[in-house]
Length: 152
Image 1: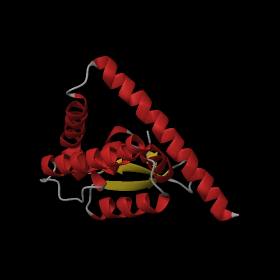
Image 2: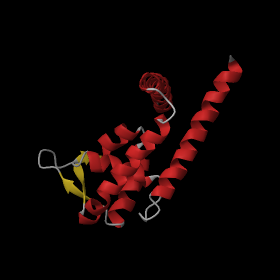
Image 3: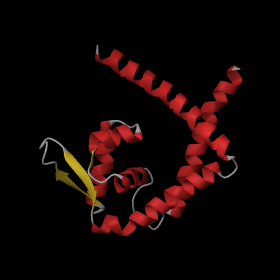
Image 4: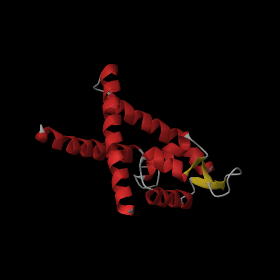
């Protein structure tokens, strides 16, 4: 059993690296770093999202999100707008340049989902999602536990 458990991490890492390579190849005409595609995709699907919400949606820390947003703003793909209901927060929106690649980004991410599930039946794909959500939940719980422990 322990040998199998070790393979989960290896398989997950291999899937992630290969999927990132596919995304980078399909989005090579978009001059941003690979890791920023995810941020741009989520913003394109949820304009007005805050950085905190974006961090939560992508399960990354606030500093990673801040760096990606700074780069995407610099590149002219997104803009920050202070929220009228709470001036402490800014919503993230696509600029005209970002709107110009929105369809390409969204299409590419849908293609990635198709690639990942290509060899699975609908039932297997649903089961895989449930299992991955369960794994992610356990990992996030442990991360939060460790953060809390460090802050004490």
